[in-house]
Image (tube, rainbow, N blue to C red):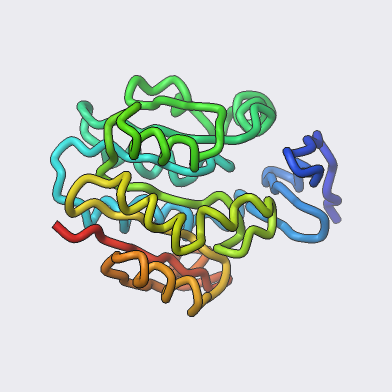
Length: 227
């Protein structure tokens, strides 16, 4: 029977430790007893990109992805985006990128060298603020997967992103008709209410963690900025 093997660890800003494990050909990133992501269950994170892009009307969208993780959302987006599009990715830990380029290089492929990618080591909230104060161009879509849902389990600072004020800032960082989409491991009626209270038109979709209607049930919210 195969055992999990610890490959590396990293301490994130508020002192929590993320661990990268391998299990045969699979990888998983773990926080304490919580498995945050795994190569075995990627479908819902790919759907975060697919379903968001399905809802966009822009021909060459500029999108912001909050959290690189294992890159499932980014790679799904790059497979759909036109050559004149731009994917900005905010990842708070350089170590996550090192894992992508090292132990998980076969999974990563050439996505991190794609000319449409602008990878930044920072908090996604900082890029949302930049779009609001005119430091950078606004986005057609903001895709958020920076925690296991809108509860700040991994980083308490993430709660501000998922607050009504945080959703209002995300809305203001969008171009008219733009979409903010949020991945979650579980339902959260309070968060859906906060999205609506921030002025977004909200749609909720249930997706499975694996294709063919298998695996855990996850949730993606889509909030459209009114034109």
